[in-house]
Length: 263
Image (spheres, rainbow, N blue to C red):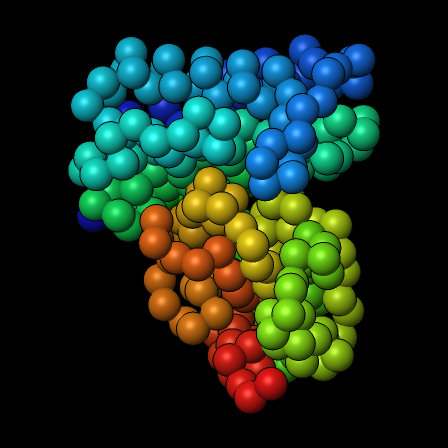
């Protein structure tokens, strides 16, 4: 079933809201707190998510919300919004423009809508069930599509950091990395947008929260790509935070076989 247009409109408003808040704080002197998971957080993260939640409550008060900074509210509702006000806070507090805001929507646990917004770069990808993924920048809005890539040897591979892979996960990731044609680090959510636009072929990550990966699903799938957990299962609220996305199913299958192969 196609994603209702009113949900798409709200997703864009949520991304606009987050963008407006975080840009007020970008490259300003900010106090940085370290959360229990050792990740940084600022007033920009918290204020942006609060503003997004207020907009959801006003527009669709029966919808649930799961956000990185303010937790869960009715996660069992038919419709649940997934919010990450700043994906890449370490870059944000360092003055680096490659940070994003992520918005997703689940319908009965299945991702049907996703936004990758890059506030400082003025780019946005939007994917919605029943519609092609679009990319918007200063030149306008256009539909995007993944590219063909038949082998790992030809693949551009993105991962945010090698440090996100621990123990057996690192060994598994290395089996793919050594076969990839061009492995690159530091992509954050931007890499998934580039994959959807056909500029990269593969993204592999671990240790992700639901707010990190669920907004990506509709963006990748709407561009013709595949995104699953390392076992090949659909991503949901109960997934383990390990993600593999590819533009070409052949590339996805080859990477998944290596990720789940013997250590």
